[in-house]
Length: 190
Image (cartoon, rainbow, N blue to C red; front, side, top):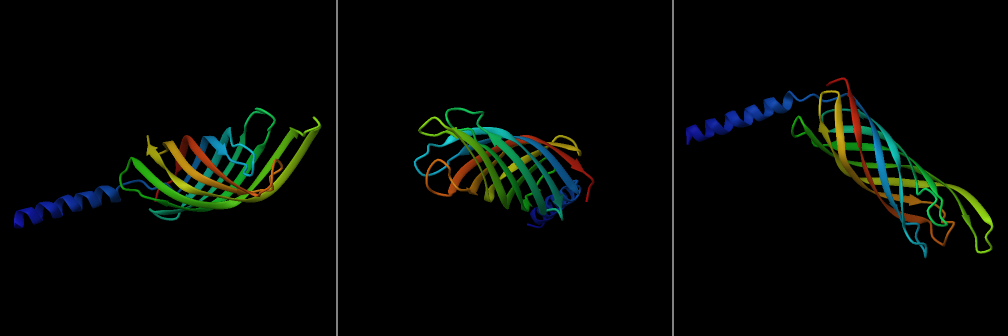
């Protein structure tokens, strides 16, 4: 029994030492490809949009950080819908730094969205509209460290809520899904 206890204590101590040696970056900057499933609501069908986003994160400690996320998405003018959506989101991130290579995280971001669109009405007249509203993104992802300075983000999946006037139908709330992947540059160490 004493040998088992000693072995478990040594293994646990080695794991804590390995975790303590992990480099925690002070700041992280990410450049990402983003895919957005937009659901305008009402009687309007959902559609796909692609774009990109940039993130900046400051890590307060090993687990908690704050994030700024700026993204732009467009469907490329497919069909009669031609929206371009810009999001600006801020909030906390909780990182599970359990190994020195993989960092899963969860975040809750709030801010705003701006949508600009043009479309043809029933009389084939061109109509343009621009609106601003509330936005929130709730979800998480995974960063995989390649070096102390670079990580890749194979996925980040979030529920993206936007509260914008709908120019196509009644309603103001859009329930969207956002997928993001990219590269993360890490700076400093804690």
